[in-house]
Length: 321
Image 1 (cartoon, one colour):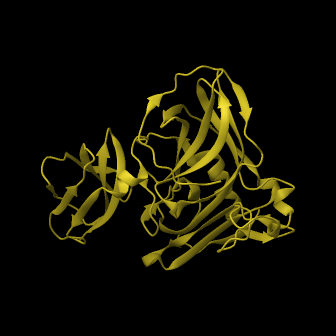
Image 2: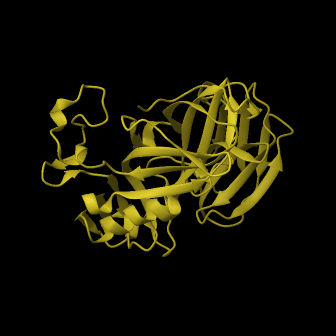
Image 3: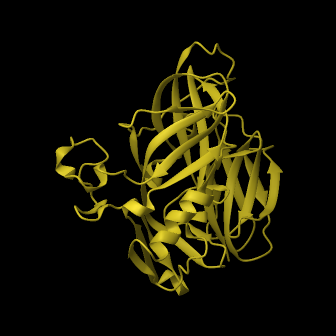
């Protein structure tokens, strides 16, 4: 099950160990330190610029680590098909559990046996395993695509890359240290998913096409296992509706002079941060007036973020000529 959830209240987890509390895993979709956006330029650890055009993956076989190393398994029926384009974050409902202090979460990327090799038409229209468009099912013998990561790279982003990772032997478990926080009466375990790390050590500028089990498709799955997920530092008090109601504009874009950031929001914004295409912070300023003017010295692609409590709430891309 996968939903986008609006939340408005926040508290540290302090409840009885006997209490059953509804528990959720929240995945924030990221490109480096920025909120994920399709067709936004990012750069991997090999210095390759790339843009993402499709990013979907399955999550299954969840368990929660808590209270001195105890591990509570979530129902095996819990499965999520993540789509990075769905919004700022996605939520997996993990059920109700007796938990005092969350210490981490475990899950697998992909679809477990024997489900992986069963008939996808057996599932209802809203189930993650039912036939999708674009397809996440490779065929009965090979099963589902655990991960579909597609985009463009190379000069002027003229080279298409595709990694479709699959295979029962590549059904990897991920273990992430994390804490829980009470949000609107629910226990939320929040993770950042940095999809730049998903293409570590993959030459995305060379038009790689890898559909299978033992090439760059395998490297991408290993990257999701080892590098993509971490405990989140996002502001859990900001709801999806609140973020959508933040009206702001960056102009002119592209710009050959100073850029102007106009913010009209009922939400309190602490400041404005600008990062370059490498994720390096190049400017940060407080929001004093309705319009803030910032000078950028070098030409290039930049990401302007509105900040609250040290966290980027929403981000826009600009080009300095």
